[in-house]
Image 1 (cartoon, one colour):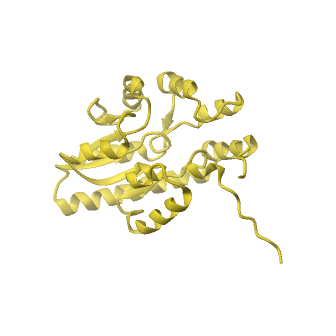
Image 2: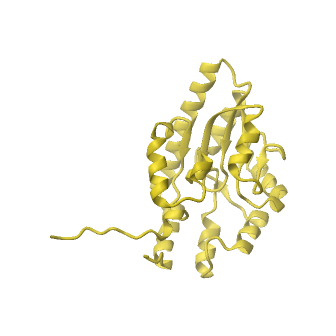
Image 3: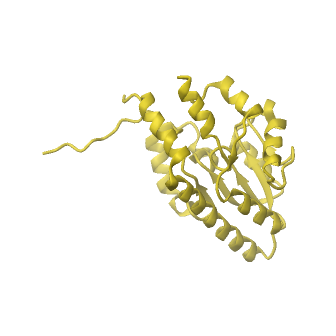
Length: 223
């Protein structure tokens, strides 16, 4: 197995934090999301009863600063104590396009659910962060953090709403079928559900985290 070295990871984090391309991709995702949301509301006639479900980290909030700190301290990216501290005391900023999109959803009467695997013990801190950044519909009922699997939390939302759009940076942000499976199965299922990407599933770029991170590279073999 190919080891994902600190140097490799530093490049990935630099891409997330410093590249103009990732900002362009993020804006592109939100522009597409806005188009799809307007279409859904137009087809329904109003936003009543409709919902969007969005992941938070690397979808709404840019956490590259804590990723960089983790690298400087030679800690693992998912170091629990560091992430808990960041959730409580960090100062992330919004990914480009996020503010306009969520205020559009709010103006259309669509219900927003912020669905994240942030620690539930830091729920009030997460709510405070989203509120500080002036995002709409930030309430305890609409910020659903780690506890039951995301699929169960989505099912709870679907009791009273029709989910018309989901946003996230990993495939399990969209459907429970992607949780806890290997890369080959992820690719197979992504292909099976290809018609949903860019429609009601909008995937954001994240080069710094994912189950693919230890995958073997397949170099060209010169004849």
